[in-house]
Structures are given as C-alpha cells and as structure tokens.
Image 1 (tube, rainbow, N blue to C red):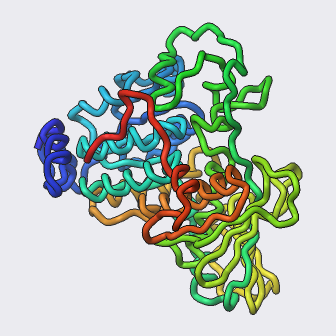
Image 2: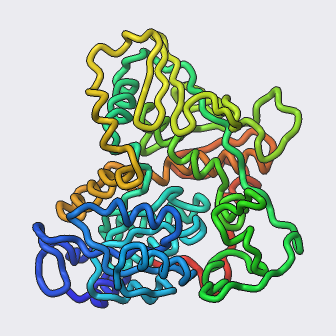
Length: 430
C-alpha cells in the first residue's frame, strides 16, 4: 500500500491493513529500521532526535522556523530533507512514524493528520490543548489503527512502574489522600498587550500560529522561554495549558497509574476552601469515585518541596513519594523487595531520558501492540489538568463524568471543554 493509498483508506473506511505490518517497497518489516520524521525540532524535539534508538532512523525534519531545522542539520552534520509545513511532510512515502514535539496547540492537529496518513505517532505531552480535541485524537488513532505513544516517559521507567504498581496492588493499604504540586495555569492575552515586532527571517508566523487566534508577532509569544521576560508560549492560553498541563501531565499520570484509573478519572474538582485570591495559581483539589482526594498542596516555587513530577500517596499502612526515576517510603522498610537502584542510571543524561520510551513505541510499531503510554492513557491524564484550568476559570466546584466526558448539568463548564479554531485549521474528519 502506498502512503497516499494508506491515507485515503484511513479516512474512507474503518479498517485497513497497516502499512507497517508487512515488508515491501516503502514499508518496514519486522527486522528493519523504522523511518521517522520529527515535527518541531526546538529544545525537546532536538532532544528526542538524540533519543532515537538504533531501531529507528530520522529521514526528515519539519518546523515552522527554518532556523531551528538548520541548527539541527548542522549539529548532526546531516542532510535530512526539511519541510516547513507538516501537512506537506506527511505526503512523503518513506515514513513509518512521526515524532511530534511542536508547541502544544499543534499536537492534536499534527497527530490526527499523521494517523490519517497511515503513520504511527510519538506525541510529546501534553496530549492535547483541550479535552474535546484530545478525545478526537483517541478516536482517530483507534479508527486508523495507529500506534500513538504519549511522551510521559515515566511510564517506561522501572522505578516509577514498580512504585505505581506497589500502590495499585495495595502496598500502602487504601489510599486516603494524594498530594501534588500546585502547578499554575496560563495567562490570557489582552489585545495589544505586546507590541508588534519584526518577524525573523525563516519563521512562518502564520503557520506557527496554526489553529490559534491571530496575534502580531512578538518573541515572548513564539519562544519556549524568553531569558528577558521568563515568559514563552507555554505561559499563554492560546498555545498551552500552562504548567498544569506541562509538568502536571507527568504528575497526574503517576496518580492515574497508581490509583488504577488509566481509563477513567476524578469525578469532582473544587478550589481550595481556604484560598481567598482566586487566580491562575489557586490550589485545586479533586476526588475520585472511590473517595480518594488529590490535593494540589506543594508550592510551585524554588526551592521545590515535594515531588515535582509525581505525588505523595498516603495510605493506611504508610506513605510513598513517587518522583521521576525514584521513590521513597515512610516507614523506610515498607517495600521489602525494591528494584535494583542501578536501573535508574539508564534514564539519566540528555541522550537517555526518553530512549527506552521511544524504543517501546518502535517495538509496538512492529508488533502492533499498544504502548505503555497509549493515547487513551495520555488523554485521561491531561484531562485532569484541563479540568483544573476549568475550575480555576469558573472559580467554583465542577463535577465530572469520566465515562461520558461531560460536566453533568453544567452548560457553562461544558462550553470550556472545546475551543474555536482558526478557519482552515479545523480538526480533520476521520
């Protein structure tokens, strides 16, 4: 099946033979290296290129800012083909998968188009910008039978997996409360807040904005973080869910995993009762149907207290703090058969931080099994973060139905589950 035929089949019928299953012209067999394109080659995309294992090979790059692709080509002394628009990139016939590390507002658009083109996807977290588009992505992945791995790599780390399974299996007894960091929400853009600046050569600003509202170019909008302002696209509502969807995607993923809620979620959210100044950093608590409460307790300030990428679980038999690539218990002997601490070393360093997670995705491309951070899992974890943002925006209690994915009887809250998109950037119909 050619790539164009695969794309037509994906959008026209519920099922088709995946292009990656059988070897042949333009297709990868079980023993071949998987051809990958990297979409978004800034800080994280460049890091993921260095985390591609031997079983994969980069064959193309894409970024709306050609200065970034030029820097990557120079760094790797490579001659990979470059596209500025991922919609054209996906027309290539030498691809088996796509690594997506764009700003958040492009995540679902690029991933859905890749699924429709018959490609498997490694999608950086957060899995979505808002809840409705996240569900649309899950549906597209299932309809097109694609392997979609979300970049919450703690799902692949042995110490994290052991600790979450320990809690899930009753190791600390019934979980009474969970404590997380109080991650902030993004800020809203006020008309004319930033003066228009000259668009740098090589940057297609209209393409970079994609489905987002149109603004005049300013470097504080387009960069991940500005050294001058300490503000970047991750802090603006139009492009990101803020720290609560960025770092919170990792922390809430550990909560979901440890509580056995990978296909579900909490049922109620509310602002902390003792908080008088409602705003982007208002602490929010939420509750699962089991009665377990999660409290955004630790301040998001240096020096950090508590697990910045995990949570503290308090149970009847003791408590366990799960953070990236490590865990501690109280009492210390709560775990009697811990994994070898040396397993943590394989995840340390720039070239290793996601290597095993990308490898799991590539393995699943070949076996067609679901990866450890499947798109449904990633969608459910970031849904918590989106609902924290909804709760802060409304400043009141919000009930949630994780089965129907609606706020029962709450039209005001339900309107915040979706967003308008710029004309021409509507989500594809799969």
